Length: 157
Image (cartoon, rainbow, N blue to C red; front, side, top):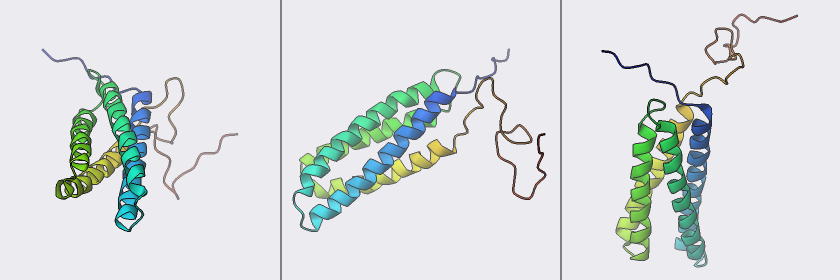
């Protein structure tokens, strides 16, 4: 007995995943800049580093909800859910290590966390968006991709 074919994920959860992944990446890069500013002697940056960490934690939890919407049974891939769950645990550990002033753990986990967030960003943007319902897919072959430069071009009259 074969299982029914999987329905592809709808567009809006994938667009939200791209949005949250991009926001996470920007916040993570800001975290690195704020940490560097603090280490450079601008001690007020530490308060901004803390506030940005709270925003990052909020967005990662929001992305966890989005990843559930992407995966909802039979639709999208599973990897966004597991990677976002891992990122959520890492962010909690990162904040805990920061408040505990365990700098060896905090810096090491920070490097791994930023790397994981950037890999998640690339993965989110590599997921193909399904064509909009009721609209023809762009491209000459109906694949949703634009034609290659130098290829045949049809001109409508």
